Image 1 (cartoon, rainbow, N blue to C red):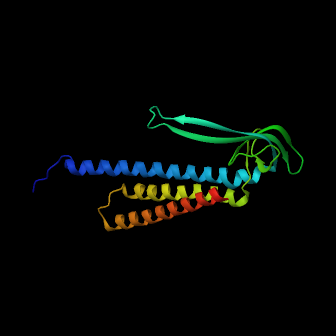
Image 2: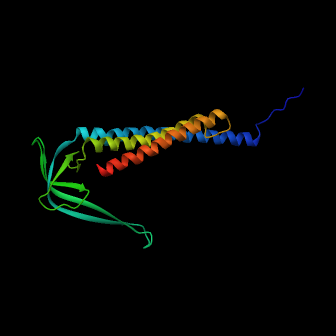
Length: 193
């Protein structure tokens, strides 16, 4: 009996290379998912819990327009509203006469807004725990999408030749769709909170 020595067929080698690349992409998506999870925990509930509640008495509000794009057809105008005034912490521990707050609307001088001091010179509108948890859930939903597709890719290399691989991929797509629905619902809550 003779045995033939040599490399695998070109089709098999190319398929193995695609599986390796798919597994590498899956591992990268798992890493992205972990980063999104950490950002969601930090930007949502943690930032809210460690910030200082208070009130911002508005002196003036302005609108800043920015244009993006190079041609007149693709040029987009974005509008950002800022209010300036005096921030006073609810417990009286801090007062900033030159506070700047990115706001959701233009307010008149003398209006009092619920705000939170999130850093030495940074302030944000206070949307309560509902808004903070919704922001965290939006990041968590994005994490679900990245992790579901990443785990599927890391385990199968995105090759769906076997029935078990197809089942895993369907499960990953289901979890990713739950993530998409969660993301949309969370963003709607953030928008309306």
